[in-house]
Image (cartoon, rainbow, N blue to C red; front, side):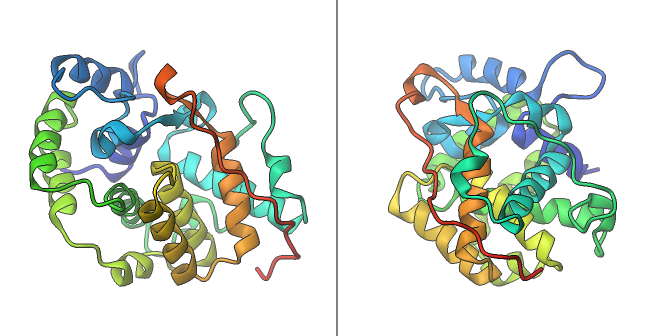
Length: 256
């Protein structure tokens, strides 16, 4: 049976409960066996992204688990936006403090009106849609991904779900409908931004379109950009040259 929360943890390389390793470690071993197409990082998201992964989430988010990490990042961005901080202030030296969203806010998973599992699958679909944004996942790439997913050891149900999503045409209306609250809309965008670093026009265009369809204010999007950039580090020396694209707008008071 598919476990949505475990799959989301796998995608972000979160700690596997009861073990001393992460899925990122397992996928890293898989990469060694797939020398014909080495990946920039070992997280399962890198399998979806191919060599474009570039950066990965830092330890604070990994330790929280995928659902709490996305909610925590979205909540942190929202708080900075509401407080009128400049987005650049969210980027601090070293790993930023990241906490789960408070239980009494709509960012906490327990507050999901459609249920945690249903919304978790929406976040996974958002990440997969973002991974497909630059159009590099064609039939040949999907075959390579299928082999690497098997090596990653995520289980047949998760493999089947991911491959089905990769083969399904983008349906932005359905994806957006999966976010039922303002907080969930922000989390959906945050998950998408976590998946990719918009280094191409196609990726940047997809994120801009998504933000627009979700009705997110530009200044709030800028805070997500800054917060996510601060939570990601180069995945390899090759990726060290990539710089985070911090925004410079000052946030007005929140409408939420």
